[in-house]
Structure formats: structure tokens, C-alpha cells
Length: 215
Image (tube, rainbow, N blue to C red; front, side, top):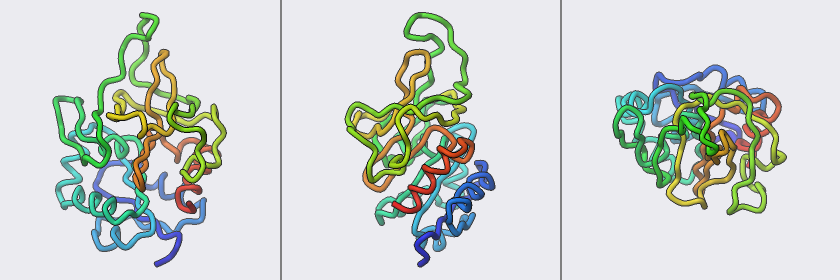
């Protein structure tokens, strides 16, 4: 098995080519696939995704890829969920009614508030560049995909819902939007998730992808 062999799970939802190009620029040998054997034999696995949570889970389940993702996690293969892929790692979402997620990290996906903590209206979705802050339970980002990132470097977000892990220990990095702390990067053992799009985040995003495949 090649050390840099990375599978991107193709379940019909997500900007696969952009993610693949980003990983390839970081030295990975990338396979975009829905084949369970190929996914389970990979050194690293990426679960991308854009759009609604319920549709993402529906498409994952079509070919039992939800169970494949769980098996990847059980095998302790490093797994990275991106945007919707990150949200689906949690137990459930409130988007368009309750939908069960993969249950790999305890927590829920909830709407971003339409009001700032100061009581002003704020734009939804949260779109654009925002800086990463070290979450309170961590002193640094060593030995994680954020290892080469400096606090307050910016990455690109586009989302209307946000992950709300049940424990702050799962929050590796946050960002502030309307004064609210949003989980930007989550972690549990070999499972990682970023709310932002590293493939659209320039040099900072490439540092994150490179650290993920080389950690």
C-alpha cells in the first residue's frame, strides 16, 4: 500500500475534482471511488460533501458507503470529512427535519443563528474567509492536520448549518461569526473534520491537506 494513497469517497455529492487536485499538489496518489475495497485499502480517506445533510446521507447509504466509512474509522485509518462530510460525522442534523448521521463523533448539526451575540441580524450562509482560533481544550495543534497552521490564519467557509459536538474536547479549532464560536475543525482519535474547504483555502488549505496525508 502506497504511503500517500488517498481515496476520495464518490457518492455523488461534493466538489471531488477540486479536492483531488489539492491532494495531488501535496504529493498524494488520489483515487476518486465508490468501491469499498479500494476505500478500505487506502492509507488515507476523504469524505467530501456540499449541499443538504439529508441528501448526503441518502446518497451515502445507497451503496452502503455509510457502513464503509464506519469501517474506515474502526480500522483507525485517518479519515477527513470536509464541509458536509464533516457534519455527517456527527449523530444527527436538524436541517430540514432531523436526519441521523454517521455517529462517529457525538453531537448535532444545528442552524447558524440569524442574530449576532450583540442582537444584530447577520448574513446566512456564512460565506468567505475567516480565521482559525485554537479551541480552549488544546494548547497547540501538534500531530494534527493543523500542525503547520498558525493561529488566526484564514480559510474559506460556506455553510448555513454548523457542527455542535457534545464535548468541547472534540473541537480542535474554532472561528468567530457574529461573535459566536463555531467549530471549524473537529477531531476524535483518527477522525477529523473541517467545516471550511481546504481545497479553496489557498496555501493554508494545502498545508492542512499535506499534514493530513503525512501525519
